[in-house]
Image (cartoon, rainbow, N blue to C red):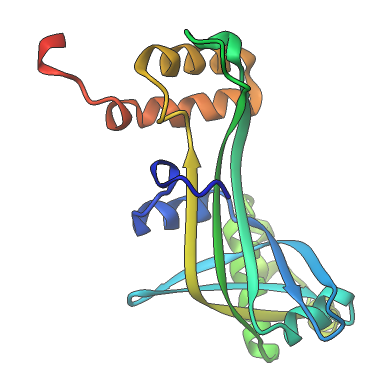
Length: 213
């Protein structure tokens, strides 16, 4: 991620909120073979006192299942909306262009769980995202659960480090910031989502001055 300090999000509560808003992560690790393996999974985030824990599940007997279990450290990368920022939106057009985005990287040691732990993760994930109350976890037949629990394995990650970057044009002047926000809104989709994130933080990035009031 871009290391400039003005883009880093250091508020733990905002990072937790972001991860819960965008829970689908890229999970990577390096096993004994030395090959980087990655998979894409939704993750539950638990606050344990001052620490954080991630939980999820993967298919057994896959390359990433082996690598994640063997890795000394895994990385869970969470990403939000992103959009390009163009020079034509700036007062000074000597600007190569850039990209606004939101991301959080959580690192730690992954530990595989037993059947009871795996079952609890399946229950929590299904009930969290399932909107129809008649299709919650308790509606699943026991035979289906038995087959499922044999094919997948739950895990937890005790988080050792957190890095978050919310790069939302906060380093641009107010005119360029507002121009970018307006242009992104007109484009719709993820660009409009980025614009709304910028709008929510506008007063933080550009506090009103007394002489403007």
